Length: 337
Image (cartoon, rainbow, N blue to C red; front, side, top):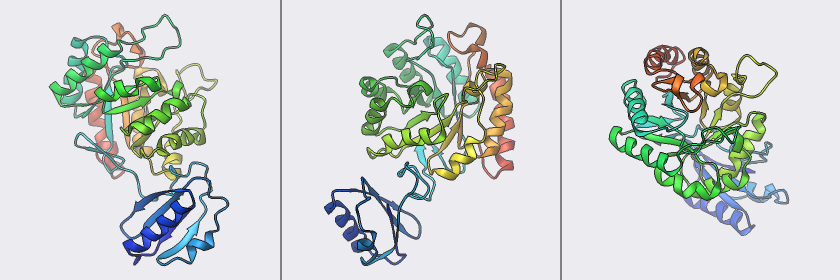
């Protein structure tokens, strides 16, 4: 349920409504727009009589939120959520690019990549310290050592860090080093992890599961939001279909669909979405044209020697050209890179 206050509602009016909600054993979330304040009622409010609130001073209307993802829905928060980070505003007019290798391999590799992506205009560096892999024999990441390398590179180059966390018990450790905590596709419905991330409060990049619907993605976001952590980004990274030519099928429909359903920023991952480096540029441009708030792209100085996902990684010079091309696409749709 959401309660829309009148334009002339006072702070006292808003507080009285909030107090009444709490008296009923429910929780509140205030969304203050330019003209109105919207009060979200969190909890099982089905037995609540909406007329009780409609009669209160300053209330314009009371509406039931139909989608099961209440906190993530546009009905609950009509204005876009914007997450400020390292001089960027994720979810605003600017299209934010995050770039770096799939996995942290060593200090030399990360310094080389960090220098290259920063020169291209990137402010957020990606790199995996913990790597969930299909095969137990594949490179699993450097763990804490990888996090320490990321932190060193961040301090040297002034870049924010996004890296994956795989287990709830690892959230405090990864949060100590990272600026954005990434939930990989395989962990989208790891509810213990989502609870831990909600309680932690740091920005979260939540990737869509490879066989998950948009509603399931939004319900996973709801777990994080329900703890009061509203710094959540949704990531379309391709879904599994019958097509064998590409690693996944990048769901371009998901971007405008999510932008209509939710106020949360939507990020596109064309690297995992295609699995082939020569398709990344085209899909990146399509994602920006479709309304994506950001891109997360894999860049490696020597893709043929990469320990993880070399086939979908761009070389630094290819990535630099793409950044120039993306600027034109962003401007064409009224945004900037």
